[in-house]
Image (tube, rainbow, N blue to C red; front, top):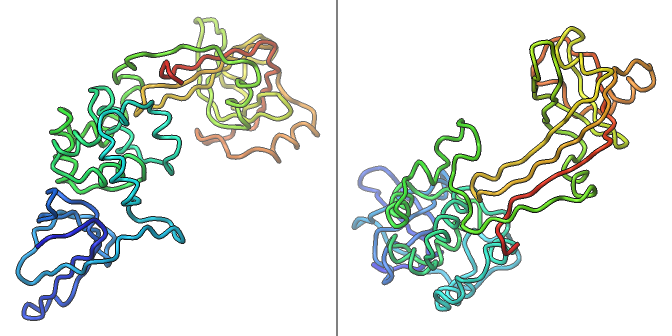
Length: 315
């Protein structure tokens, strides 16, 4: 039995009463197309490792890329050309590779990151993992749910663990992964800082208290260049009114070991004008995650806006 990516595996077991089952072959473990296969079953949309028995057969499909619909597998011609290019093509920057990919999933990004750190080509990694280079390209470039067997093979090929590829330790503080081999620390200009503040999200307000500095996460809004958040009237963040404060937002991309931060500094005040309160409430994207009665609005007008970004040196 031999198959190609995209072929259909059909299992017919009338004697056992199981009926007919079929699925698309999305992963090969041998270059000659012999079993086992990673199969995405049509009835459950789950991918499992399959060792076909005597009641199974392959329905071969025409392997022409269908550009009229969103692909369920990588473009075969493109993937084969990439595999033949070898290590030379793999030396291009991660940004060049990933910019053209339609929203790669976290598992694929972690696989690509670890592969690049070790200086491995995609073809060599696929060989070590005993899977088709086309399937590895698909994992790195698309959101995917590889089978446990595929993850075990990839983890073994990369000298890591399945838990690490799945994002184990996600509840731990961010930034515990390895640093980039060649990081670049870059200052952000005010326009970039404002773009990263966006219109809302979760930020951190730093205030001075009788017991010393304190930092609190808050849901915030940005309206007409002013940062605003809701809190309880007797809370510590509410004491920010009438003082100069610091407000920080950041983003850490754990899978790619890069990120950015933006710091806004300026005077804070308690909003009391009815029209202003109504405008803030109308533009709020969410209620405070902490719950409870948090109807006191605090606004911050930044007088200083700075930011930094960590990225690969070639970006």
